[in-house]
Length: 210
Image (cartoon, rainbow, N blue to C red; front, top):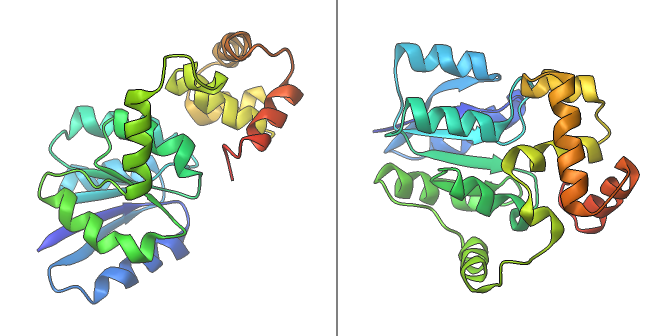
């Protein structure tokens, strides 16, 4: 039996994922969490075979949670779940150690297959993601401006573009407002921009966040 933990801040999403797996004889959801702390509590009592992790969480960034899980529980495969454009997020999550990436729009069609694959220690790579990874290997080092950003800078960029204030970002990422400002300065410099408005326009234009 493949035991699955689901981390998503929306109860309806967690219930939906559990519903999908109900009809499968070889897997089941044995734990649900709406926050990072709740997940840590679950893992403290028992570890699952697979973790499904939403990339957007209320108390901690999904990428940060992923990195923590890879450090603390390296043998548990993590499937990243997101509404965000696969083109901009999937490769980053795979590079950060995710076993696979699923878009919420197509999760019902791919979830079962993805869980079975990663539970066997393999990566779940969709056709779209496979093409992106191939392009990553072939393209020259100079790409789109945001591709030069670190994971943390990329997170801050998306949060700024979504309208979050410095204090909100600091609380979300568990860092100081001063550190957020430093990241903002760095990413604006790398992007060749001067204002948050320019940044937001770029993110919307390139469909980086939904």
